[in-house]
Length: 640
Image 1 (spheres, rainbow, N blue to C red):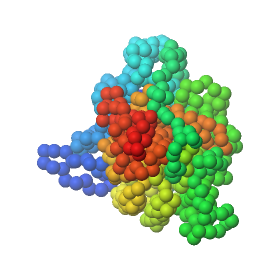
Image 2 (spheres, rainbow, N blue to C red):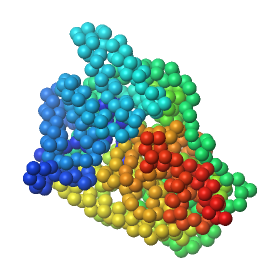
Image 3 (cartoon, rainbow, N blue to C red):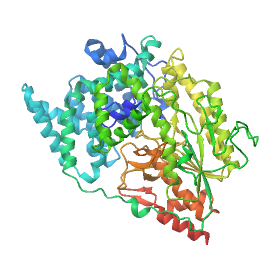
Image 4 (spheres, rainbow, N blue to C red):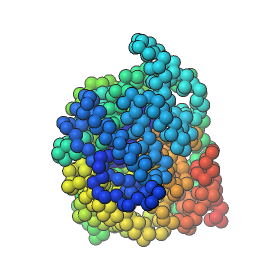
């Protein structure tokens, strides 16, 4: 949830603005002594060195203008990345890919095309997802091939590029790369110079200004990607979009949807028991689920805490504001929205349609609107989309978790997520303790309400906290920020683990994350925790193949549909969202149905049955696709 929208839009391009792990200038703290004849061990991302760069002017002007200043910056980034690879024993494939992607980008910007292609091969060799392995480097290799074929004849480049990209894409198995090509086409149609520069202007310029021109690795990586997008990617995107469209049009066969045969709905006439499922998320429009919402019979809506539990008017659930203080509203107000709600709703649907290759009026409207934006207008627009996305998120999740189960009783527990590019508040120990208390109190509330399942389609990491500190200009250097981030993160991590352990009767379900990375190496919570009553869920598409965005880890064994999942947003409109946020409530939905037909099941038994009934993923037998029909049958049998 901390990634900016522009980075999400660009993610997946052969050369993108997605998360890259990079090194920077001189370390701000003394690294541990290197073992004789060996490299420094790296157990998590926190073990990697932190470097800083001093830049003149604003990041947006540096990216836009390029030139000698950017070349010097690029040379430093390259030297640091190469130094880190030589000094540190990095085992995590995703982190290594990040380094090689960075060096690939730098090589292209420095016109070292053969080196760039060599780094592409290293990236591809580390890729574990078949679809991404096949797509890795295709755009880059087509650009390089077209440049070689065209020589000094610049007029021939467009045709040569189209031919080269078409040849490469045409040779791939459509059923494997379908999602990747659809997503690539969507991004190619909406990325623009104004969007890239506007994002940098709104998200990085203020940070650097507050830091006196200093930029850390967590933010400097975006400058390299942005310059790569402007200088190399943008010129070919119109042609690339045409080629993607031709490939898509030539494969109009329906996608095999495996979930129809697996899913099962309960009927009101079934012999079953109501089960309370908590949606711990950004808030829920409970009016959409009148018969499926949990009710606190000891409370009435009168502005008072009738039952003395510390929450006012908690008739259907609880809510916390951005300061981790209890509030009444189960759905976040949109009073900070700067655009018309109808415009943001249309653009949200348009964004989803573009990603799914749906030629809708909303998709056309979004493309037109994006082209009309000036760089200084971009950030406000992106923040509005982020705000509306959070406003819609919890209701969308609740719709998935409750689908086909008249016995479910949804209990909303609202968290208020910050939608601004520059965080509203600076992370502090006081705030971390307040958030930790809110988490413990929320789980205690779940226990008293008889909750059996909790869905958590959210997450954060130690690195996120460190990045927020930098964005707020806190600390004298990166070492001080890193130390405080560890402390703050530990407070939140330990509070969650403690709360989960206190409720062994509750099954907690976490979304793995959408960063295509190892959730444990990156220290994500709650998805990276290992507890007997916690399941972490990855995302696959309709055909059962892993999505390009899904994160993974040693504790991610169960997978569910997380691609273009249809559900409600507040007010009752239905939209399709993608993410592990949509996969996790599929498992919560299944657990709720299992408990409805067999309330005696323990959390351990729930996990055992879902695991036993899961279908091994093609090519990855240790990863299991949930099979609701089989799991529900086993749950019923164990009750008899």
